[in-house]
Each structure stands twice: as structure tokens, then as C-alpha cells.
Image 1 (cartoon, rainbow, N blue to C red):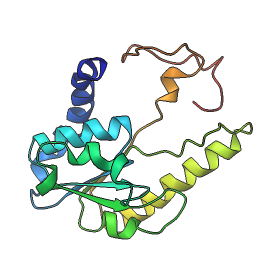
Image 2: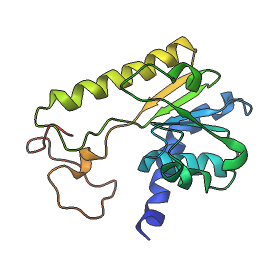
Image 3: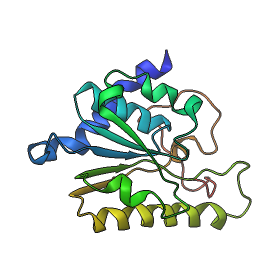
Image 4: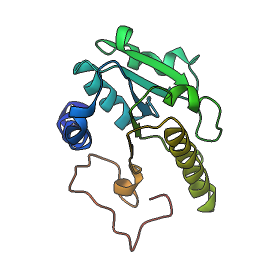
Length: 178
């Protein structure tokens, strides 16, 4: 399957993010991953759970059992995964999600459908959401906040299909979504 082929790439990314800080990691403290039902977040959470970490994930709705089911199907999720309701368009829920974490991996980004015509309708919510997460991280003295970019940076203006770490969007022809 294509997701199986991409797992080593995600593991390499996560290893780069965490490896230099593992010596400071306290095993009793959870790691927060925002946008838990997103593609990158899902694989990061899987890897963290496989390695025995306690993980918190943010989702738009903890009540959406169908959307969250794939997360709870992961090994060790029943004992090491906790979901928090937090939306990037509101400050509600972020203090609770971040409190007690030393690391926050911010993978979430609002992606409205249908895509807005005006780029500011996409950019402003992304900036606001990142600010909300960063402010909560500062407030709760998080040691490391890592923010990822959007998958659209490699898929913009390209046909659908498989992408690798070698795919980079041509900034001269890309849309405002990247």
C-alpha cells in the first residue's frame, strides 16, 4: 500500500525532530500532536505510540467516533492516547491540551472546502491557529514547538498521485494554497 511506503519517510522526519531532544524527554509527560486525524499527524502518533510515548492529539470533535476510530485502532492507543477538542479558529481547549506537555508537534492547518478564492481567507486562519498554539505553548512553558507546513506545498499545481520527499512546488507557478 502507498501509506506503508511513506511510513519510513515520516519516521525519518520525526526522528530528526525528536532525536536531539530525547535526552530531555520525561517519559511521564505526553507529547501533543495537533490535527490528530490528519495524514502526517496520524503517522507521527503511530510512531510515538509504537515507541511507548504518551500522546495527546487535538481534533475538532472528540464526539466524532467515526473520524477518530482509526486513531484508537492503533497499538497502545487505549492506554497511551488521549484526544482533546481544540479548533484552530478558537482559543477554547488549547490550554487543557497543552498543559503538562514538553513537546508540541503542530501539524494542523485549516483547509476550508470549497477552497476560498481570496488567499487571505486561507492564510489568516492558518496564522491565527498557529498563534493560538504558540501562545498556549509559551504559557505552559513547552520546551519545543515544531510546526509543519501544508501538504499543498508539494501537491499544488500537480496532478494527483504519489509524491516523495523529492517533490517540491515551483514557487513561480504555485497558488496561494501553498
